[in-house]
Length: 210
Picture 1 (cartoon, rainbow, N blue to C red):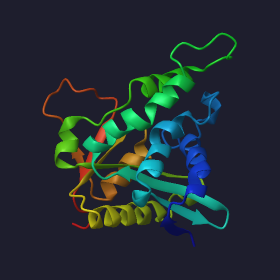
Picture 2: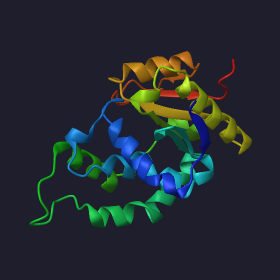
Picture 3: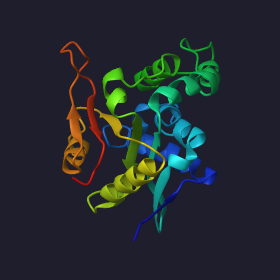
Picture 4: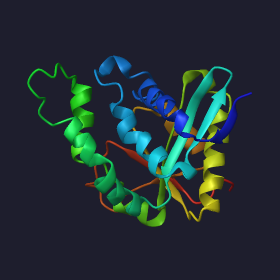
């Protein structure tokens, strides 16, 4: 039986590995990157480092196989990363590769662009659903109810810490994740304007038990 537990600093390497192993709409993205740590830099590590009390992992007999990490207050978390997380990474991964630094893939370049122009949650989901999260499971734990357990545990913890609702974004190609969030009772969040980008589908919830 896989167990859900609080994140510890020794889990950080596992978070990086899972981020790239699930980074292609839930499938392995490692073949797309030269720098395998890039996805973890953006979507996993800063949450575990700066809000470890809101980071959970799920572990089976083979090791950590999934995580759910997030920020309690999105609008406070994003400027914190601007000060304490992105600057060092921007120096480490310049927009233009240094001479002799080697080949970069298109996937590397896309994530490095995000490091230099950090992603922000749109104002319209963050206003009503101020927390946000990222959840990923390795294939060996999928389809067995572990994702539901992990998301429910994260939601309960975030509520105990004062969250009044959370939001998350999903790639439109990730149909399995979209079905999962719908089955969990999350609301599809629609912007007030039709000119909003359609490369991310947004979900939100105040209570999973409706």
